[in-house]
Amino acid sequence: MGVPAFSDIAKAANDLLNKDFYHLSAGTIEVKSNTPNNVAFKVTGKSTHDKATSGTIEGKYSDKPNGLTLTQTWNTANTLETKVEMADNIAKGLKAEGIFSFLPATQAYGTKFNLHFQQSNFHGRAFFDLLKGPTASIDAIVGRDGFLAGASAGYDVAKAKITGYSAAIGYHAPTYRAAITATDNLSVFAASYYHKVNSQVEAGSKATWNSKSGNAVGLEVAAKYRLDPVSFVKAKINDRGVAAVAYNVLLREGVTLGVGASFDTQKLDQATHKVGTSFTFES
Image (cartoon, rainbow, N blue to C red; front, side):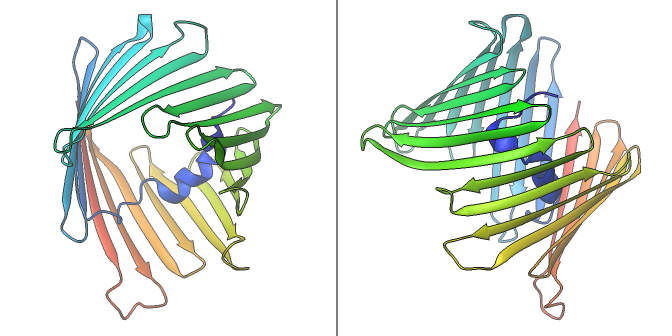
């Protein structure tokens, strides 16, 4: 089991609580296709509950023997982004990324450079925004026998000051994971737990406390149940009584349907519920 990135120390619980719940958008459609020469295309479209629409088209070329990946995206906000990744070229475990963005309407440019370095018991990353600031964000995590500890910090070169810092500890085992994080300059604390009960059932929870906003602690719990090899259901509820349910099914090879809904259990007589659907097509 490798050491995760700093932002992924609580990924298992966060994915269970947030991923595959479809009520956040009224409708989502995603079309993926792959060509024999290692080029992958993806088109994504979303419709919000306010009837606003957005979309993204992406093309990705991968040259795995040489560790090269080239990704080009264009979205309905008229933003063009090119991402170049080089993995294991300079040293094993080292990946370098260059991200270049352009907004034709305003002629604005963006340039970012990132480094990822991973070994059996270490995972470090550095993110540089070369035109904004410039700024740098660095994080690292070390692990041994399932125990993890890490920290992150941001720095503004122009202002010559630290812009933020965080810390985290955790424990990862094959069937359960726990993490405690302190973010936003060690002012927002979160404790999460994930448990893979068996091949069909997963459960998780997360408690969050913002020391700047009082003594109230937010709590979320979620569960996932796999009905059969091609479908599953999920449910979650938080301390405010807002619940969500979702159903995901592989209709046929390459076609996946997701349906979700959320509702406020304290206001069932009001129109606070949201319903969303998602279709994914792969070839």
